Image (cartoon, rainbow, N blue to C red):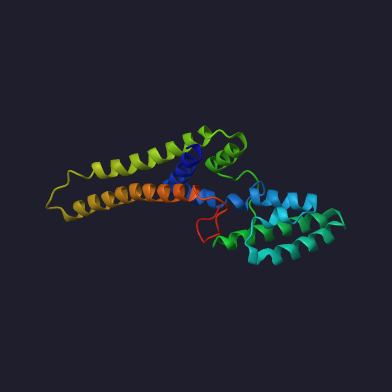
Length: 205
């Protein structure tokens, strides 16, 4: 039940307007993809990085990993530059697998609060720290759209422009609710499937 609720609330967040901040999650220097790249270099195990890319992209990462290891032997600035290049390559290839563009690595500290909370919940097992901000965001989105509709409901039937404004608000409100249910339902059902899901072009992390 907790796992199902986690997926539902995360889906609600995506529909509630947090999709854009989430898109920068894997771009950041303190995000999970760069963390995997660091771990791979520190351990010498490229497999720790490969889990973030599709099978068809493994060769690209293996080649970049080998070049980085060779450059690291030089030390100093050369090694640091090589590490950064490997981070960028892994993030770029990961995002390509998601059908998302890569515009460069972002500084640490730019992970959106709800996504950071989601990562922390994975470590603590406490879903409450994710649910609270998600519920607040969804509530705000619903309230804003409902107010927009109710404030226009008493329009003069002879005023076509006012009527269209009401209809526009109504459509936005209903579609928002519909997206919440559709996204939450489809992602919650997917969470019940065993094994890792295939990479598909979708919203980036």
